[in-house]
Image 1 (cartoon, rainbow, N blue to C red):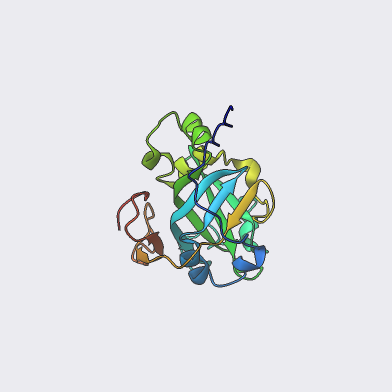
Image 2 (tube, rainbow, N blue to C red):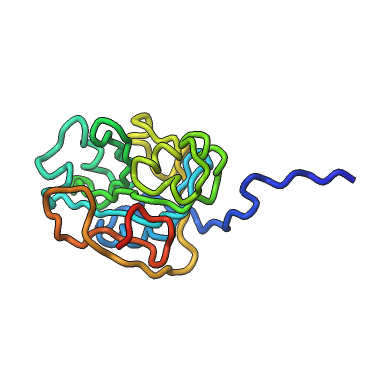
Amino acid sequence: MVQSPKPADAAAPRLGKPLKRSFFGRSVHEVAPDLIGATLLVNGVGGIITEVEAYHHTDPAAHSFNGPTPRNRVMFGPPGFAYVYRSYGIHWCVNFVCEAEGSASAVLIRALEPTHGLPAMRRRRGLQEARSLCSGPGKLCEALGITIKHNELPLDQPPFALHARIGKPETISGVRIGITKAVDLPWRYGLKGSRFLSKRF
């Protein structure tokens, strides 16, 4: 008897309940740590969120600080949509819009632990080491195939799928990375003990 081949992600952990857009209609400082341990998938490829950063409209490091522009308009709501932008003219970065419409606050997704679609991620990134696939916001977007075409898309509809964490993982916080304003705010959150971070806390 011929056995069916195992799926590529046979060892992938089970998923929690799907997150709805209403999950994001709260303070960005509540949403950001609550995303640690959740699973982000894009067309079925992705993994467990291990590191994020919060950006509030009163924060001079936020793209929305000086008001709406064609680039950042999605940040002004409603919540539960993707804000994708190009960093340093090189890398795409994905953010999740939070808070009530008009607030213009968002969470930057900085790192994932790859769990689903590793062959696709390795092909896109041109490397094998799982720890390096999504260890930064630009790497993450390249691995998941996120580009400007995903900007302004709802986070609870395909190609996006977000699943709540199972249990409550221990999180840690620290200052954000790669900014020159409001550098002392401890608005970076991570999964304690994770090997899949962009930078240690």
